[in-house]
Amino acid sequence: MNKLAIIGGTGLSTMENLEIIRREIVQTPYGEPSAPLAYGKIGNCDVIFLPRHGYGHTLPPHKINYRANIHALKDAGATHVLAIAAVGGIHSDMGAKRIVLPDQIIDYTHSRINTYFEESLTHVTHIDFSYPYSEYVRNKIIAASKKLKIDIATKATYAATQGPRLETAAEIAKLEKDGCDIVGMTGMPEACLARELGLEYACLAVVANLAAGKSDEELTMEMIKANLKEGMENTQKIVAEVIAKM
Ligand code: HPA
Image (cartoon, rainbow, N blue to C red):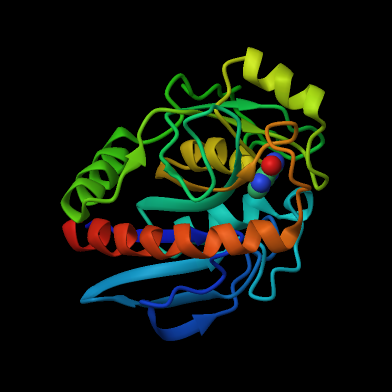
């Protein structure tokens, strides 16, 4: 049976339409996840919710224990993961508040543990990561947004950067040359760890700001939060519709 887990990102540490039934502190062989897992319901459907940065949004992207997070969701019985993320917009189509469903990712992070396959190996494992996001979950999201008449971008390359600082204008220009459309700090290694554990994983991103050098405005957390508020409202509607259809 399908069981959906939602990983909430910046601007979505709690979900308004999630009725929490219980919270559970869990341990994994890789340590503790970012927060206790919340088991609950959206409508009539069971979901597991995990805020990536903790309930108080205290964990910066490079300090998140991605292995523990994904392992905890797998242990809890999740089969599918819908990861919500805040991003900066690089391509001119990716304006503030836009909801984006990336289909590709380029990993620019470093010094993050990015595999479960490193100790006690009987053989070396290389997962196929040509298409990093689950087409099944992506198609459910596309169908849900069409039904709700919420316009989303369904093709985009996500640049995963190290953070926690935002990028320089020159770095964004380089990412754009590389073919990246949006930029965020948490897309990797989350996506590849989910693939290693056989979870069907997709990311739904909300553009919080135009990336560095793409606007004359100074990038502030206040601006990011204000833009996210509106985008996250529609994102939650899409999530509820996806769950109902799974
Ligand atoms: N860069 C990286 N990550 C982000 C950004 C950004 O501009 N906005 C929100 N997350």
